[in-house]
Amino acid sequence: MTAAGVMPSQGLRLERNPAKVLGSSFLSPSSTRSLSMAAGKSRVPAVSLQQQGSGRSNPLIIRNVVSTEKRDGFASISEEDYAENFRPPHITDNFDIPARPSTFCAKTSLPDGRTINRFSNDLGKIFVHEDDRVLLKTIKYASPASAGAECVDRDCNFHHQWVARAGPRSKIYFDPAEVNAAIVTCGGLCPGLNDVIRQVVLTLDCYGVTNIRGISNGYRGFFEEDLHDIPLNRKIVQNIHLEGGSVLGVSRGGARTTDIVDSIEKKNINMLFVLGGNGTHAGALAIHNECHERGMKVVVVGVPKTIDNDILLMDRTFGFDTAVEEAQKAINSAYIEATSAYNGVGIVKLMGRQSGFIAMHASLASGQVDVCLIPEVGFTLDGPEGLMQHIHYLLETKGRAVICVAEGAGQDLMASLSNGATDASGNPVLGDIGVHLTKEVKKHFKDIGMPADVKYIDPTYMIRACRANASDRILCAVLGQNAVHAGFAGFTGITVGLANNHYVLLPIPEVISHARNVDPNSRMWHRCLTSTGQPDFL
Ligand SMILES: Nc1ncnc2c1ncn2[C@@H]1O[C@H](COP(=O)(O)OP(=O)(O)OP(=O)(O)O)[C@@H](O)[C@H]1O
Ligand SMILES: O=P(O)(O)OC[C@H]1O[C@](O)(CO)[C@@H](O)[C@@H]1O
Ligand SMILES: [Mg+2]
View 1 (cartoon, rainbow, N blue to C red):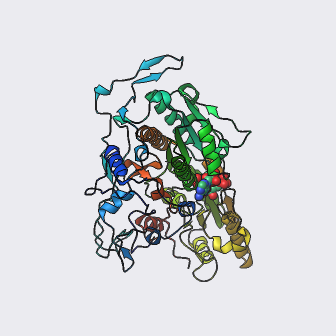
View 2: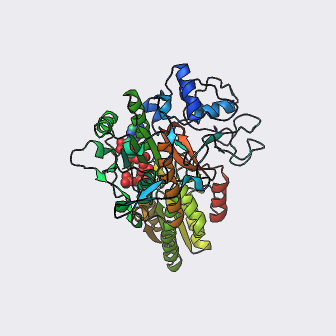
View 3: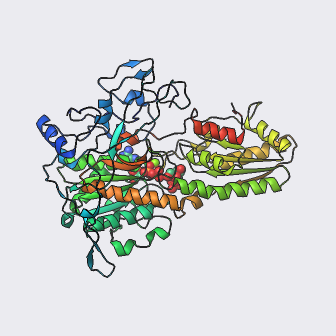
């Protein structure tokens, strides 16, 4: 991201049905359907997998908006463009399915197998109107030079970006008796996975769905012969949120879209909930597209899971808050060690392959960190501006130095170590910056004959395996419930999220074009620097 020109929607421009959007609002599923049919076109995004990949790319280039005119690095995009881009794909875009009254909360099952009426839909306003919208951006920047400015034109004009509001609709597109739901958790672990699984199951139960399965160990569970589905119901999931991890298991790699969709077809799954990060969502989009190409009436709904908080457009993803909180223990231990030692240096490594949000927030929260290093901001070790000089200064002035480093930081300093290797999902295998820094700091002070007592803490997997904290559990509850509401409302190829403090539905391509990064021009990074008092190390 540059301070000068950040696209409002940092995703791909989809080749969509040219249905005219009125003003800045969206079309309701029913009106969209008639327009789609009239136009004789499918709204399934014609986007290749390569385009869907989570590798970084310049949003100004990939958003190939026909009406876009680029001037001084800015693209002029109309509010209609936003509306069209953020219109969540709907099952009725491709199939003529009648809407039916919602069954949400009509009844629920008890642990003993009995069914009771929950509460009547007449009791109050429980439904979100299908035309409800959430405003994505709320700041009107006066100038592209404003801190963290996201401007779409040279004059920094404000464009309304309305996105669909998440929540239960009064009309649904599935008969609960015919729903065959599946949940899959992919990628790495993240605090809160079990909470989301639990909420998806509880909410399906509230709609009256009894046929629910968990797919074992991520996408692999669809086709690895030794992996078996796990039946799920209200009773089974009742206490799963009390532990970290995923009761379904996770995995990386092995995503063969055609095999997965063969399996979906064979198992008759028609509502798929996919919990995962950028890679998982790219897979979900591929599954969604393949299902539609095969004429399968399947909705695919994502729930963004990334402890790193690196998914576009979202205020935060579940697990992040827990990670920041858990990291405090490690930072505090490093601080205690460093302050108690003679010339103590405490180094803590935190997760964040491409994005330094955990390290930045944990450093800011702790107030004990002297230097925060993130992937988005380069640094050097040696020379007058280098990190070693600053540690030297800290030892002389404070008698200690506490460093919080994100795992993706300083990879250029260890180019020879990582060797271009990738994991099963194609993610780069990183060099261990924590170990590298520890060695370099020890070596530097030994070389100059100054005592330095260096202690290194790597709490990464301890943090990731935690049970979610209360605030993340609430986020998980709302996201899990909204995923089911979205599925019943017929939305597909979408994901749920918290944007601008409201719960929304977003088309998957809009959130996965690249990882969300810390903007070095943002107020938050500047707040972190104000707190640590660190200089630039370049
Ligand atoms: N471009 C892609 N298209 C289809 N499937 C993909 C793609 N990228 C990754 N996947 C699959 O999605 C699953 C999860 O991907 P990955 O391991 O990158 O985790 P992730 O969802 O990004 O989560 P995390 O935040 O933990 O990295 C894997 O099974 C992987 O094969
Ligand atoms: O070791 P694993 O399981 O591949 O996971 C490590 C990765 O997972 C992440 O937390 C993303 O989920 C990265 O920050 C980290 O590099
Ligand atoms: Mg990933």
